[in-house]
Length: 469
Image (cartoon, rainbow, N blue to C red; front, side, top):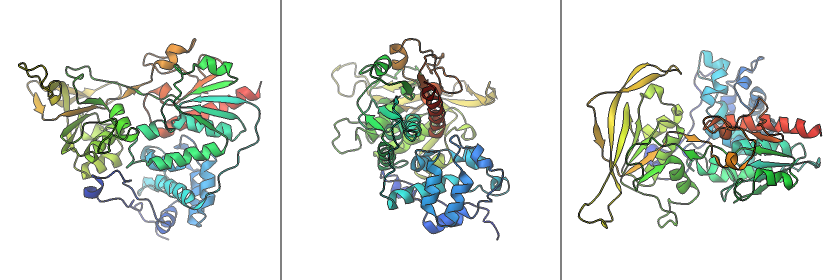
């Protein structure tokens, strides 16, 4: 049978429609399309795709089940190693991980592994109501700090082994970056809630509105009877450029902008926690978070949205799919441009003028690519005399985040690196016995699936540590 050289297209909302709503952009495969896509898999003996997956899902086996129409069996194979299949099928960069290793991809387009994972998870959620049974308790208690992907993965793996696990989340909704950072149109909150409910069925307790380092300390968790602690508190401290005007009204970090929109319902007509709507918006940065912020601003009614990035399209770090969607929706990419000042309104004759202190524009300079830097990327160099002003009234800074220093500042003996990341060994163990860490709290901002891999590694190490007691 001849193999289709191209993966089956993912159906999605039309750009002109989706740019004005928060419904999910990608609509998912039908059963028929999923089976046809699964048939493209060569079922290689060496299984190179598995090596590209940070949580080592048995990809050929679950795809084989799809070929045979055994969708629940496929789901069970995935969940042996992944606690968040519906999430991963949507937001993981498969193109640089499992799909990049696909043998079929040497000659044709790789198998749509992520799309198939999403299909299987969605089929399960739509057709199976029975929750997994909680395993028999082994008598040990473990605390998880943060309910993002690393924390939930660690919690799930430990719960399956009979540990009594409690997840402590600072915000009012469980999910961490999955709910506050990723927009509804890419990852519906209901999907995350279902994944969390599955973990609760396994016996995981989730305590929200608990800020570890303020409400409780890690030392107090041990005093409460927890025998090990996993820190998956993420990297929620936004970075800024330290240019003039960043304190003006209408300047946001992408973290604040997305959190207000996602969890604080700033998209409502009369929100309790408002956010600037309409007008012209500049998003500074070129990663996935920048794409999320720009596309969210568009859906909130902005008349014009710019992505301002100091390198070219070839160096843009965001996923190709997200960039493609942003272009289709009308986002204007201002490439090889760099901000040097944010301009604000000030009426010298009336200090009470309500317009005072608000953004009126952003001064930028044009750039060109010079010699490669230490990472091999061509360094952007300013072109003298190229200053210009971008007409905007909202600026969103999306140039990365750092781990929040709260855990370090309230926990004795916890070592961190120069970037604020918690230092761990290959098993996720920190400088304190019984305290493990992983995900963005260690590495700084990275992918969902890499954080899950770190949670998985730490869960294995915690199990070995407590089993030896």
